[in-house]
Length: 451
Length: 121
Image (tube, rainbow over all chains, first blue to last red; front, side, top):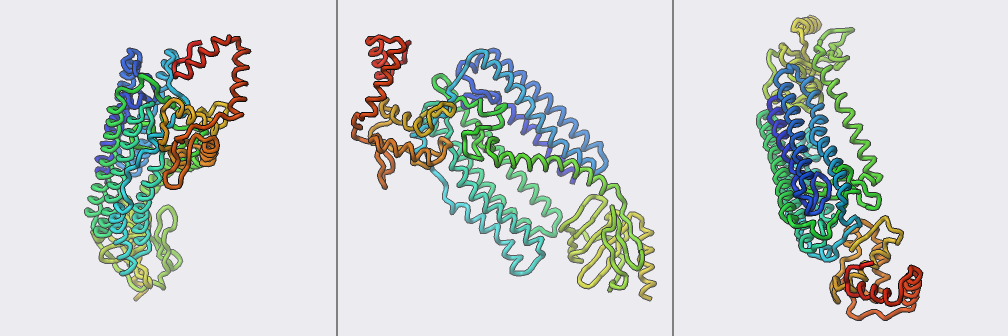
């Protein structure tokens, strides 16, 4: 799993680097989040700042990439590796945002010094607003929606765990919501860079077309992924391959759409900025965060590319940021939890007429009198699916589904056989210990009890 | 169309004024379709009621016409000179006189604005 994660995360470094690097190319008269007139594009000071930005971005990206590679190779424990991986979310975000913020500030100072100023009042192009919108029909989203409902329908008709039904339902809801998100996105305002109506109409069409392509692609990919989830439920490699392929497709769609939109925006505005041009720098903190108390909208288009962002002046955005910040703060705690899980040994013992499975506390306590059958397994079945709980290289804890055994309450180290299988009514327990002697002792005690 | 949120003039009045100037400059032609209230509200990020108020004012004054099928279009018939417009002009001229402009300077300034030239002070 670590290798898979490594090869999945590794390309993100150069992708983020190249995406951020393109901030130095003028699009819609914006360089490094600062709106500049046409003549500023060849200004030596502006070019020098851009070159310095690219240098610092390269250094920061290289440092974070090398440390990531070192961690992957030299950190032996999964929990510590995952904890550091979480730290990389913060590090890599900072590595790409920090240089943009610093050089955005420097460029703004230069802009002030030179007296470069565009049109700061809100510009609206009434002709662009009345131009016909070429939207794809909702019907185009129907086939992937129907495909995503197949696994759910099958589970409802033929019966299945509520966890499986919930998983399939969630995937279907994601697919359905993508179709509705498309409607919301196309209600955004036109993309205005200057007073040229044809340019405004073209820029707006580029963005809307990009969104259509991206959302339709993601909807289809997610619909087909739900089929893979359904088919490869008990196939470890099938499931792994499905996740890798799905993630790769989504990543490709997002990156390709972003780059092609940025390129189109650059080409369309290559001669803009000579006359009247839109300057919304005052509304964009560091060129990245939109804050406009006069704008009623919660979600707005990013200045460049195909993304969207929130209006931080909106009250809902403040709540969202608070919730996201809390989630981010919890992430390092999850690393601490994983470390505790990995380094705490699994135990099995008999106490007061109960078979007690221990790991960071009592996990399961089964009355000996309620046990209907006992079996000692030397190996675990190969096909295993975690329904809920913790799954590490040295710990299976929670509810797992085994191809031959069905759903089992599990607490064991898969690397330390033997394993004790207990049947209690309709429930099955599969328990183990880091010390094989404990398992054998419990087994012997149970057999004595039966005899 | 420009809307300045930091200006003291109400937004609906700014929208109204910008459309009137657009018609006068020839940017908006007679019979040309204007965005719907909803579309313009989305474009400007303001409340639909604000845009609706601006459109209602323009319709009352005769600058635009709203039909069920055709939407909102720039009116083909020029609006008549109203008493209110004359009063506003009277006030403006009084203010310019107080700024020290002579009659000739005032007329030259008016000619520049009328012809869409850049104003030289």
